[in-house]
Amino acid sequence: MIGTARPERDLAWCTPKRVPGEVTSLEGSTSGGLAVGAAGKVGVLDLTLASTGGVTRIERHYQRSPLHIFRPIYLDQGRPDMAFIFLQQSGDGLVQGDRCRIDISLMEGSAAHFATQSATTAFPCHSNYASQLINLRADADAVFEYLPDPVIPFRASRLVQKMRVVAHPHSTLIIGETVLPGRVAFGESHQYDVFWSETEVLDQDGNLLFSDLLRLLPGETNPHSPAVFGAHDVVASLYVITDRVRPDCMVETLRATMSGVPEVLVGVSELPNGCGAGVRVLARTSRSAKGAIRSAWGAAHEEILGTPVPDLRKG
Image: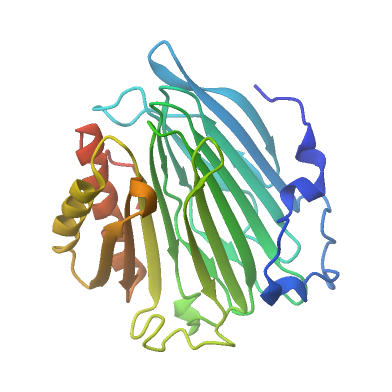
């Protein structure tokens, strides 16, 4: 059911409150295109899911183009209650002046896996920038997997992404992010202007559990320097936040799994405040990065839930 719009119609609600200094100079008018706030440039997706009759269903649903979802499907025979939802963005991708916001809440005891239908592309910006705000919340005993397809920042693109996660002490979240170097087939390799991705995970009282920042400015620092990617082109991260498995045990499981993944560099460590484990992957190709993240997700999913990951029916 489509809910009643409240702050969703407010442009400020969909715009980052703190824009990094590296992009504040880009907040001018969107010359040569639709203005910030124009129809189709402020995407909103607001979802609340709850466990009803032993199955996770959508309780609240508000969406505003270009963001929308497909109806939930149930793919996991080991967790038949888990809803699998695919997010979609109409149009080809994010352009200058786009402001998108995603809010997803899982109520107590619910379980859901979110993925995107395809990669998120960021197009060149002649002025201004594009942004995404992602707010995730998991209540007690909820299982929340958020594993979108990669972000592909095109030449001269400017993308600011901020993710804020609120995790109950007895919830489980598996969150992933993958960034590709651009349109490799067109000879692009980290030729975007800015890619800025902040991740914050907090407890229900608002205390910061950990934060992570991926700050890429090729014009300032060569992405292929030894201190950044070196000979690699793709970076991916996976955060496993749970109290069902001790952090050191989760690290051991992930390290054992990732040691057998070819063609990647991998680091696995405990997250701060004993809230879980984190994985960072460097790869030469998108295929290698995808395989590594899928392996990490599969190992974490099975260790926590006791069942292998299902086939998502995607290429």
